[in-house]
Length: 152
Image 1 (cartoon, one colour):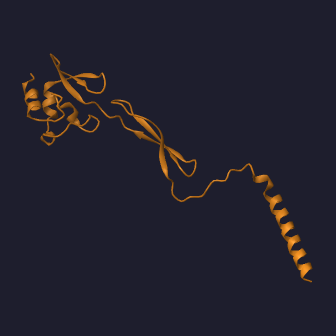
Image 2: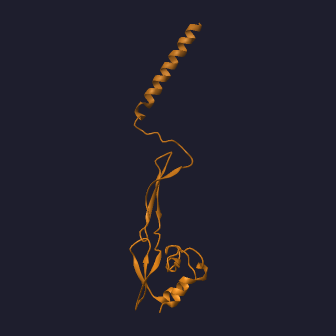
């Protein structure tokens, strides 16, 4: 009797295994996507921003194929004084690119703000302090103010 039970159990196991294999035989080409509740992204690639051009960062999940892009805004210019004055104003050149611009002396006076004093200038995309470090010493101070007041 015991022998019949063992044979019956083994036959049932073999039949169940055969049905299971047959049921999933056609699903081998379907990729299995792991299920997770939180993405874990890393920077896959990036295009760095310049003074005037935006950049792009592409992120990819470590656990699945999810990706997304993030725009990085342009950095803006950081100007310094070239020692050139013309009838139109003061010529400034960017420290990071070849861009130059002429700014009217009155416009520079209007940009002067006491909150920028004794601080490092930030690029023009952030605020106007990128125009004010005229001597290029990386701090906005009384010397810069004197230069602006000297312009006609």
